[in-house]
Length: 245
Image (tube, rainbow, N blue to C red; front, side):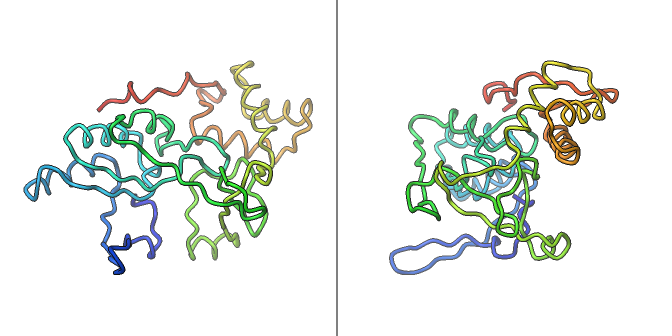
C-alpha cells in the first residue's frame, strides 16, 4: 500500500535455498490498481503468484480482488496482521469491512496460516500486537493507521514501537471508557459532540480531553456518524459478500 512510505518497505526479501532474494515492490493506492497490474502482466502467464505485504492498509475492495485472483487460478500470498493495536479485527481504510471478513471469504482450497509470536514479557504465545508510544501502551483513541517514520517522530516527538503480547500482558488504556461512549451514542442518538462529551464527563467521569479524542476517533473511523452536527451509530458494517466485486 502506498500509505506505507518507509524506505525499508520498498523491497520484499525471502530465502531461496541459502541465497537471499530481494524483489522490488509495486506500491498501489487502491485495490483496483492490483487488478490493472495483474491484467497488464497476464501475457507472462495465466496463473501467477502475487505477494501482498500489509494489505490491511488498502480499501475493502481487496476482498473482491483476492476472491477474483483465487477463482482465476492465481496464488495470492498475504503477509498481514489480523488484529489491530486495539486487539480488534483490522478495518480496511474505507472502514467498510475488516480482516475478519477477508479471512472468512478466502476459498477453502486457499487455506491461510496464522503464525503467532512469543510474548515479549513472558515468552508465552502472543495473540496481540501491543502499540507503545515512548515505551507506554497507546490509548484506545490513538489513530488506527500510524506509520512510524523519521518525519513523524520529529514532528510529534512520539516514538512508536510494537511488541507481541499475550492476553495477560496486553493493555489498552481507555478502552472500556471508549466502548461506553460508543454505547451511549447508540442508545441516545442525536447528541451533539458537546453533549456527548459533557455526559461522558459528568455521568461517567471520563476526562474531557479523553472524551473529545474518543468521539473524534469514532467519527473519523465511521463508527459514529455525524449528521447536521448530531451523532448517530451507523448501521452494522457491511459483510464481504455485500461488497461490490
